[in-house]
Image (tube, rainbow over all chains, first blue to last red; front, side, top):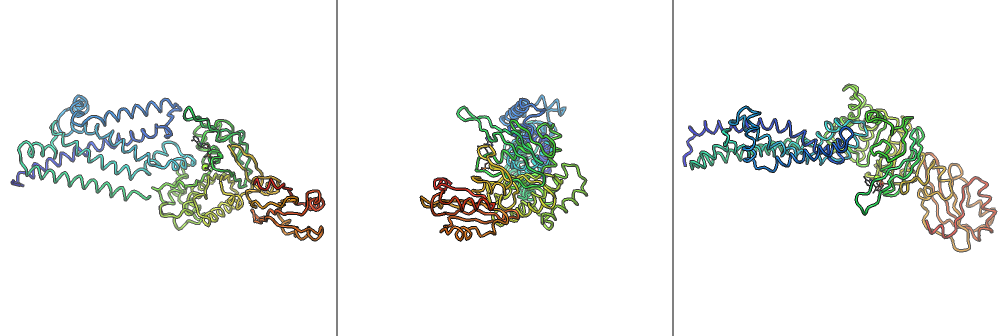
Length: 228
Length: 337
Ligand SMILES: Nc1ncnc2c1ncn2[C@@H]1O[C@H](COP(=O)(O)OP(=O)(O)OP(=O)(O)O)[C@@H](O)[C@H]1O
Ligand SMILES: [Mg+2]
């Protein structure tokens, strides 16, 4: 086994950049969509602050079950199938079906429902007494969400976020199929297909280090944010 | 200040075998401006449901809630939120936001009211000073003791200058000493700010310490209500018996057992010695309790007089004439308590 760093470093460097681009961009969309979906899942549920949007209990229940269904569908498909099935949608949104940008679409679609469920779990942990207290002070529903639910659940949401990032890194290993490159792609093409153990071992070490770092960062931030 | 009329709240049966729960079952209640009104009752009597109906955290099934002349049940959502800014509420488990410091918790209601940052800070400082927590304003709730947390709760509830404070078992999670200091604080605020307080509790001690008036709730109904002093002077009052439990000491058969309730200056009068001197009676004291309620000394005394009631007609009449509230108990009644 030969670690030929002169050729490996540029290859791996590019792969790391690609992984970070894919994961970073997808993460933006995951937060942008996953957080509101998670909030809506809790808020439209029985006893939630938006249980009766526009005074209609039926609308709230319909919204809740529709969202829940979509989220479950997104969660039930293996990423590799999701990615292939989404190719037409990807072409529509990204203008192309190959490359880093194209990978962001299926990655986000996979991570949004995952993160949304984690946000939901985090929000459900917030003591209902706090919501009552806010109501007794005359808070609107939006204020309750913005100033009670989300800040109180923030440590748990941050932990959920680091879990989601790790999932994204995991999914992104398969993005090589649509030509997005990334660390996983190197491991597959060089390490597996060309039996190059140097690449295999290096990519594994890289992935482990990255995942550890993200998890530690997430736990550390959650602890910093929590004043319980 | 608070008028509750014909209030009902029922919870529909959750399944086929369960029955509809009538948690509040026809309550009428009036809380006068500036008084502390306590609602007492056993577990499950409907206390929490009642107080949560007052600021409509719980929508009553029917009935009206009028606070400061405004019928809350007729308000739109936006009007109700505005009205709630004038009704403070404190809770058994404090319900402070763990993500905010003491000062930020106190400012929460002021933010909702749309007050400017500077005005909020000034007001928070002022009210924290009033509850004696000025030095802990940058602490987080998790760093405070239970009593301190409740002080923050009180400061938060009162920051917006409400006329009314609702208290849902505010001292039930506290130890006796802390309870005492929180009750004293509520009493002070009541006097200083002219604050009207409606509180619910299962502890008679709370009523004794700070309530001007009291209502006893049982199975969703107020079965007794009035000023504490009046109820103490009402023969057969369950509130009075609960305030002064005298145990089960009965007189012997053939003798007369009487119970005397006193309030104010009457306490100082030497009742027992007067009876034994003037009527040559051998009196046994079966039970006695004297306490300070509000600013007045009140008490109950259970005496056994030799002979049946006819034999004791004269001394009993004499006691009644002297302005004492007196009840003649048959032995069975004593035991029943
Ligand atoms: N959300 C609810 N759904 C169904 N039943 C309820 C609900 N809330 C209260 N109840 C019922 O209403 C009755 C009164 O409850 P409430 O909580 O008002 O009693 P309480 O006097 O506060 O008792 P405690 O001293 O134990 O707190 C109880 O029988 C209770 O089971
Ligand atoms: Mg209760």
